[in-house]
Image (cartoon, rainbow over all chains, first blue to last red; front, side):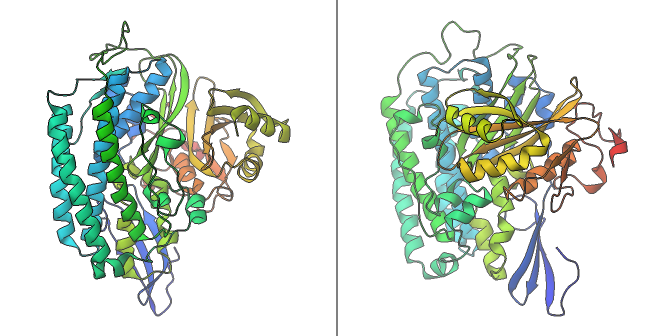
Length: 374
Length: 158
């Protein structure tokens, strides 16, 4: 961004600590009156060097590290990392383990979307929204807690399966929570559709068209809100997603309202997937029979090779590129987080809008700066 | 479009530049490309083969072979095939043409690869550090011979 200012222009720094987005990053806005004429992002305030750390840890230790990429979606990160390693090892988890992983992935999606919507409400001054969604999210976190024994960082997935079986009576405890959640989602939707201030802050704000979104490399709900039905669970099915019935939620407007609506619809689809999982989950072992892999995998050497594996994160396409040289530590892991391109796409989207809309646009992207910084 | 068709079309258009092409599975393909031709190949992939989504750009340090690889993962919003395009670069002279003019979102990936590996992307619009502080330029932390913050690796390149 140019330093020289016109007499009627000024630069406003949003961040590094600003409630507009969880996690520190700085947005430099060049304003002319209230209109944004230029924008520039600085990040790296919490760069954790996870790719380097992974090169110095064994594969099993790596699972605890990838949890920390973005703690809202720790289990999806684990699925991506463990999936990469399983591809290199040439093993596949048995069906029961795959179902448990799907259950956890979808619960993760629900709690991440609930928090995303609540925070978005807070950014545009709809603070009670946050209270409503955080209450529902706690219930969902308790379900995850029942399975993994942790609320934020889990280290639950293991190579070839999962650490523990579902607890006794999990289905009976989960069904009422999900039924309540269905009602709450309907209430949220009604609030969004009838609240006039909410509509005026979001409808037609931050419009992303399908062509622009594709060109910017965006994925996940911001892309689906423009009408592109791109979802890794459908395009490139992993785990048991091909046996489950669900639809890819899309909207056509591409504005802030549509992005939140896509998340609402995805919560409904996730609940539907969970109900199918509870009905279909087979009994059986958690790890491949007769294999070396189990709950405690000893020092393990992974055959040399390389793999690129991607999964659908609540924020879009999460991919990892793992290279093994045959030793017990990965040679190189490249993490392609979904929020990185979305954050990069923020300046072109906010140029030309007013400064009051910046928080709405940035919040509706549902960012996780921790993941962009890795 | 399937993997065989894509690889055939790619070698048909660039018989000299593409080498070691392999189909890893039904939805994964891999190929090496000459460093001079990478931008042309990307233009062809985007224009003719529907590869309109750049997943990532990253560097890999093969210190025993004394070379870097720049790896592009290019996918599509229409078909599930992901192409892993690799370029070999000598360690003494890691320079390659930027592909920002083809794929807009390559910008940050190339900046990150530059500051972590010291690979120079020619004609990049704004090649400066992104995630590391500016006084760490020249440290190249993801190189395999990096020894920790106060020690420098390959300081002569800056």
